[in-house]
Length: 91
Image (cartoon, rainbow, N blue to C red; front, top):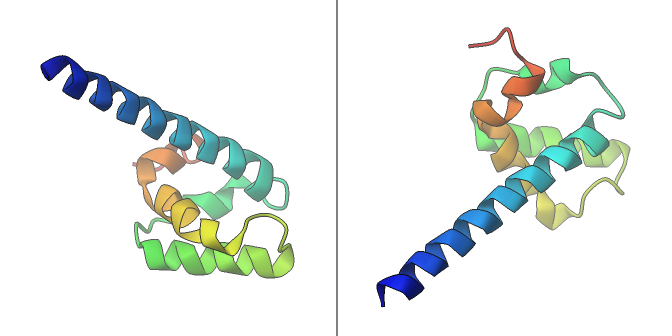
């Protein structure tokens, strides 16, 4: 029983890591091709703020993301640890 539980946790962690890695790649390819990283250095963790920002991006180029992907992208961007590589001078 413990082995199955542990295997499930390991698989879940691998999926979460893969999604985070994929989201970073998407930010690199889809956000940074239009503007610089300074747009990612906004000091807010407000997911709703990031949802509005991503929705504005789609207004300029609707092919960047599917509308249903906005919440996942916004949640990823709202985490300062995810944006830190582009904003190294920020705490």
